[in-house]
Amino acid sequence: MKFDGNCEKESMLMRNSSDSLGDESKYATIQTHGDEDLVDAFNVFDKDRNGLISANELRSVLISLGFSQEACAIEACTAMIARVDKNGDAHVDLCEFTSLLRLECHHDSCGILAL
Image (cartoon, rainbow, N blue to C red; front, side):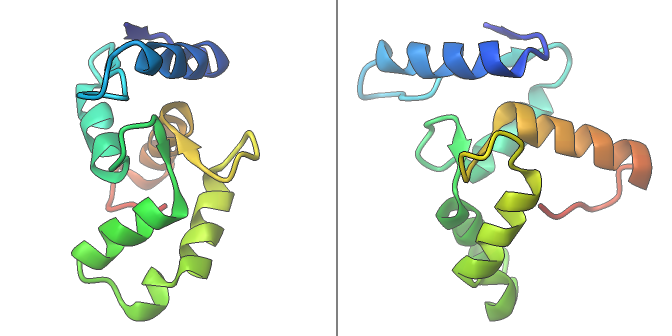
């Protein structure tokens, strides 16, 4: 499956593909046009491989990276997700994640980013 930037189509394809992959992998890995690193970065956060990053998954990664208790609070993680969540589902999908990083890299010269 190729990621062509059509967020709604890609989210639907990811979820439909995950239903037929069996127990081994619930999440269809998308190979982007030269953006495999973005998919790999997304997968660091998407622990359950459902194609979405939840506040709990974000919290888990922040804790593992040694962030402060304040940054790791579920309320803080929910707020971070909300700032990125364009479709209002309280999660970050691959398209939202990719859009965030591309926007941030354009404006921040690809410095270290936080959701």
